[in-house]
Length: 99
Image 1: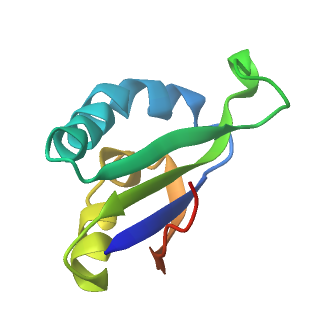
Image 2 (image 1 turned 120 degrees about the horizontal axis):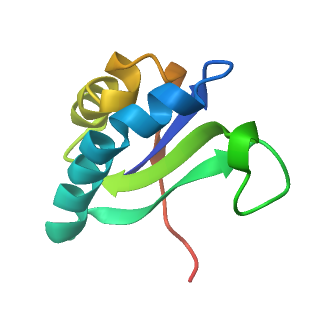
């Protein structure tokens, strides 16, 4: 089943985010390689694809896991969590309807 992982950044998290980004992307790439990643990306803090020093306010990942417990465990071990980028992570089942 698909699960939406919605994370909110701590204030002024850009430096921590950039430092932990390679490990974070490696985990996402592993999901993609396994055919289990629907989409992933950050929420810019301002209305721009490249927010520069304004940074990001959080992230959204939609990926396939066996169950909610597995999705939650995976999300809670993200490098952005351990580096203090995210202060809150919510995981919910997601039903893809369109396209």
